[in-house]
Picture 1 (cartoon, rainbow, N blue to C red):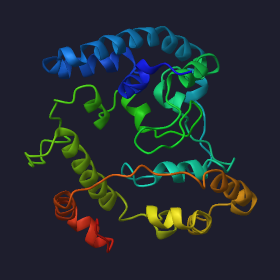
Picture 2 (picture 1 turned 90 degrees about the vertical axis):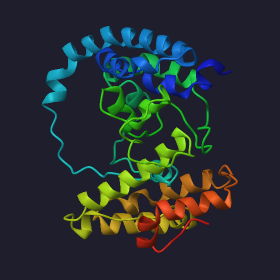
Picture 3 (picture 1 turned 45 degrees about the horizontal axis):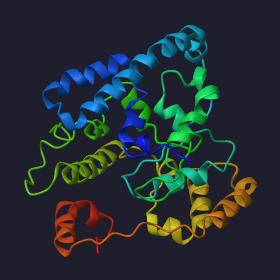
Length: 288
């Protein structure tokens, strides 16, 4: 049995792990955007942020010296991609290799005190979360590998997820995109796609080919094992042979997975091909 209240308000699960200082900063920026429709969310998150404070202080006192002196001995592997581009699937697949460690859902939602509280409270998170993500039917629980964007925004870093609480806020993510007939949510998606690919182009120019690999969603789902082998080979990672059976087992367990289907209007397809044209043409593909 699941609690439906939190399941209907995904943003509560995201922002309820914020530090109180970061949340007050968000409120100060968006105080003019408070509406009766989001007041209950604001009050709920404020209570949670206050509850986070003593746990955060306790974790700092117990662990800050140890975490501060922790040495990262091996280079991390970063998965970078836009929403709905297959990053979660790739994350789940690589997570089958036990040489890797990825932050899980609980750790990303409660980044300021998970070392102290995860053993006690993660099961509660599992209870109130939906079993699948509503946007793509991917399995979701407290130990699922999760994107660290949630942790960063809960620690106070600027994030497009701020829009989930204050959807009327025309943040810097949207201001330069003047397509007035689109909703704020649609402009957010389009703009973040532009920002992501512009940043990737700029930041990866000097990265050696052996340290960077591009993979499209269609190729990954068509032959995940072959593409994982290519990733390990090009990035010169060890462990593919040892983990190959775990990869195969995961793909077999999810072979009946069905993606959500959406009807896309022809005018929307034309719009996206025009707005994202430069990035799409560079990859020799278009939206159809």
